[in-house]
Image (tube, rainbow, N blue to C red; front, side):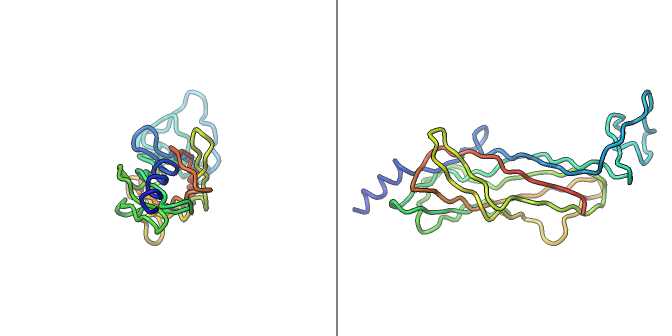
Length: 196
């Protein structure tokens, strides 16, 4: 009976988010101060407060802040997982190490797993608030669903942009199967960033 359960789990519920092109994508959402248009034919002098990295096409906010942007270096990958039976199970990805911790209802079937990585760019030495969603529903091409929850980062305390106006961080989450269904799951993780 146990071997039948494992065979069934591999066939029914191999919940995966493979690396590279098919990992869950992350939808960056950056909230920045309102932009004011630059006068036609003018550009800020390099090194001036309005130069914003000496880029004449970047507009500085009314309080002198650079707009925030977020670049996602990689999404979360959980590798390959299987259910031990017909009950749902879960696994989590640690944001600091990227290691996979499989819950009691799942078995690790291998594959590459890693945490998500992102870089925020904005005004140097400013604190920022990073908001990750409470849950994200993932979908397979066949319509099966899984859920990512319990999002967390490797940042301790207040998140602060460095002297170059950048902050790199890692994030992890818990994946939970739904209705004992499996598939190649994908989804978008909206991340909101704003000055603190």
